[in-house]
Image (tube, rainbow, N blue to C red):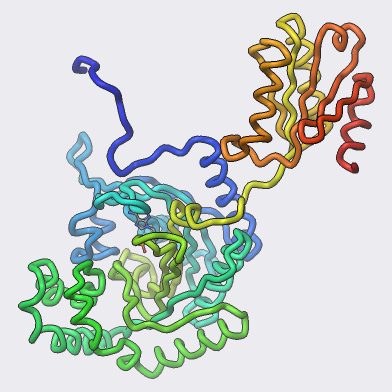
Length: 435
Ligand code: AMP
């Protein structure tokens, strides 16, 4: 180890989550668990790093992610490992490894976790970011796409989002995809001299990836490009129309756009994104789509599948509502160090009598004024308090209370104060709930 010098900082592009932010993220994840499990989706947790080959084979060699954004390193035995840049490949790898062909269909899974991409950090774009995602495997019909989108909007609705609209596209598959790629090349080639090296490479190697370009020149050239929807085979067109019908019936709002192709190679047919006007340049909250070929390409039986990944950092940034449940908060304050034992006992009693509440014992025991100031801050500066308080009460325990086995409770919002026997605590807390 070298000499310690300077202040240690989080690596570029990462950010720490401290309370109350961490509690906001946890509440979003709890909502995800509640909503997704109500549709039968169970949680999956896969490793944070995988063999590099997994991403090359699934996300695609010519995508930006694999080409220039992966955190790839050799381990001590020289195996090439990569911090996961997304979670679908890991989920599919895990299912194939566990013997997906034996599992009853459909398979419904969700996950939440960190993903890693070596991107240029800016507001809303990090090198470590969090995604919440869903995968539905074993359903090839449009009903699968519809379930996933309906559930997604149910989740967003629970978080208070009311105006979001899905942008929907259908990417041709098989021969039709090849024909679309050729048509795209023919459209762009005469104007290719206006493009940078990177986009010219995309044009030749994987023309759909031109849509990932950040160059305004590329966007201009793509404006009049052939539309994906004109290249769909019969089955794909029927799938796309059926999905729209199901979404309309369910009241999921969407618009169609030929320009959504998504930055990963494994998508077939349905792809979608949702953006928020409340975010800046990086306004995409989530993306998803169908990946019918991926399971087979990773060594499993052919299995149709669809999923999405939400950028949790952006989701939380775009939220107006607070997903944290409101909880009664008690600050239990000993009058002096001599009252700490009594304060600990009363704190325990309140936790048992008022489940779901937050009970903080003032272990510093520096007296009532300091303890009350801290309790007041939870009420007056709620944006800095870890929890969302439905009420804030101070429980004052000095020598009088301790000796008389009594409890004094002050409601910080109203200033009203009551003193009663410790044995009446349950009754008093119940009464406070009803008031
Ligand atoms: P993708 O896996 O690229 O389809 O991304 C899905 C969602 O993850 C995007 O819509 C973003 O909300 C989020 N996301 C992707 N990359 C980043 C990043 N570098 N920083 C923060 N969020 C990201």
